[in-house]
Image (cartoon, rainbow, N blue to C red; front, side, top):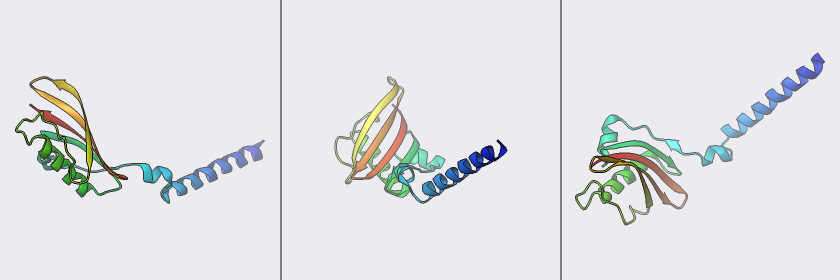
Length: 129
């Protein structure tokens, strides 16, 4: 009985080691996930919305993600209203916005996904109106 338990534990540990090595080597899960981009307080306030609350990228860099996010927000507010919408491409990226948690006349929150082929930029922001 002890031998059987010992063999089972060894097999489980070995399977876990193989799986973790496959993940570290860049298996499908590792390449499919987005990278979180850290945002300083200055960046949260300086990317064109009242607050950019999160930024993730896949297939591109955080620097590019910040640039596209700023350009999207400039496009969105180009008409002079913070609640404006961007109806054109941002560089080569096509952006889709979904607004939620709106308090009319006060603020709203939004999720934005910008894509260009396999490159994706995901951001969320809160806009005071």
